[in-house]
Image (cartoon, rainbow, N blue to C red; front, side):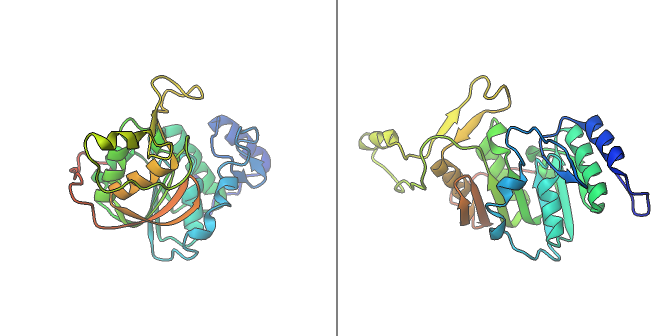
Length: 259
């Protein structure tokens, strides 16, 4: 990472380091050098971000942000640019963390902390955050609802910015609070029912793609974990606020350390 006072890298030096750290999933613009110019989702995640950035508070001065599954740091950088006092990005992949640290140096955002960790580790942070970013992670998890429970229990003090790959029916269908044991079975056949699609082997060549919800399932899991949906600017993006945990919600203890 570049430190304050170190010489600024020229374009050739940036290009060389970008190549050394590749491949990149986040297509960042590092002083005119694109990190993933041939990305299959061209301009990702910036082009995606443009569709929902208006729902995020413009001024995050004095706020703390946790970016879970930060990858090369795009959302960490955006939260810092909105004035967040503390930004912590965690990811299980050390290469992504090295990418993020390098990009932070190029951007001059060297007070962002990037640390190895996963959503399963958030209880060990011993810290709560005003904003939690959980973008593009859920469908990579074997236990997605557990992940949302852990976020709500241990780190989410106020806002959660959430996104997941989705498939199937569109719409925010919300089932009734209860159904008869026999007569209610037919409800599960509704196309709009909240539904998770299980991937037994691979999707897009990736063995970490496990569960893909439809829109209603994303919304339902967020509510079940104790979040109120306050903005829904895109079919797969939700801005939520921490609410009272629903009756019967699970609570999980902190374990280990991310220090």
